[in-house]
Length: 114
Length: 115
Image 1: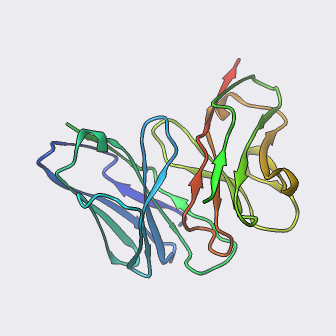
Image 2: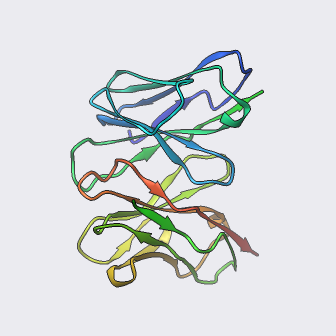
Image 3: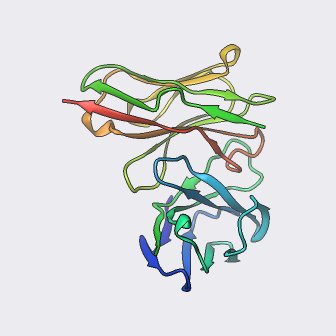
């Protein structure tokens, strides 16, 4: 199994809503990532989890709250988002601390904030 | 700080023609180098990667890339393009020694294929 599964595929939410994005992998990877991709732009790193602990936060606003409840799951909790947060949110995973490996990406969640 | 430049925002080629997508990077040492492809509204699929060793790297779907240290380049090539290759292509770098971590992407090149 070399899949990273993201749910939901599409999400429309109001600025006062609270929602969560989910990501799951069963490849035994201990590093997991959230990337944000605006339309016609490259993905940008948001968060990195290493052994279920947050290791990198790329100055992301607090309205985005990541969580890694176990080694297979990664969540992104959303609250009080703005329309400019509309984007494709990509989850990825990789082996941690192993040389010569690479990140596997999910299909993404297309988020629209209205 | 590392950066990746893909000089061509759009490229159009005829089906069956050869393809070269350019990628230049700026980094203190030789980073790990990747090419990803993304179809509209989809995630990223890894085409190939370079960590060390042979500078000509073979990937999936008939793609190859050549690492040239002197030019800080990692250009992607395919000898004969198929209509299904139409997509967005991203070159990316990562710090050596921790390849899956902290990818920095270039701006992307959108490939269009004429019949």
